[in-house]
Image 1 (spheres, rainbow, N blue to C red):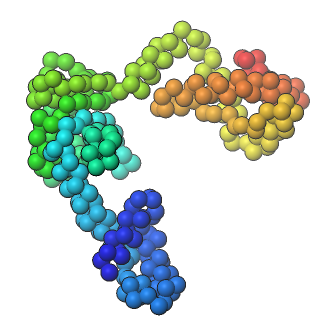
Image 2 (cartoon, rainbow, N blue to C red):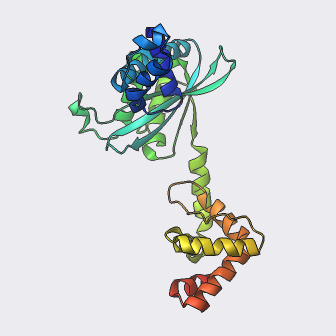
Image 3 (cartoon, one colour):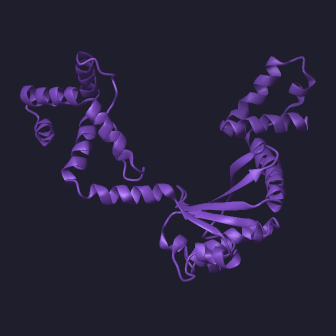
Length: 288
């Protein structure tokens, strides 16, 4: 019975299925497999499923992962964020060679709370390099993973993570692990390079891309009218994309989509301007 409960809970965790489904699934299984003794004795709802995943499957996997990390070299990747519950946590990922699978694995290790209610003295420190470093090191010390096993560290390029003169997380790792290979996030570096390059362009270019998206986003009628024009030009009925502020290099896909639909967009906005006398359509048409 315990084996069946663990396997069923592992399916929920592996496929990101809401635990709430267990309030009905166990009853459905008993009804379907009425000749099965295991199904008839299975009694597991969402609370038990959550407990099994957290205290049985999760802890067992963490112990197996810790055992592997004690015997192999590893790299540490981290990034700090604030979740919807206003809890500031750095996510720690370990990268190592898994001898069982014979490949390099990047695996989630732990979420470390920066402001832990159990340690109120850390609140005054804030999200400093010292506080972040100590929080990460405690997770490895807890599972008896020696610091000498660490050969690499990766994070974004902010001063807290990558600053010099022993005032960053990276410099503290260097002091503990001589010869440590430190690398900044390639995505952040590419984003900074692209942002500096885009400063040579007129700001109106990016503003026009946002205006095109905003013109369509809340009007199903405009979207349907645009699909008809796309079919006239034998174009795929692709929607306009939103240039995001946080998704790196998203402007590339936005510009490519506008260029792909250029002729259809010109005809659409000229028609909206001349037939319906829309000021927004006129401004977009003249800006392009």
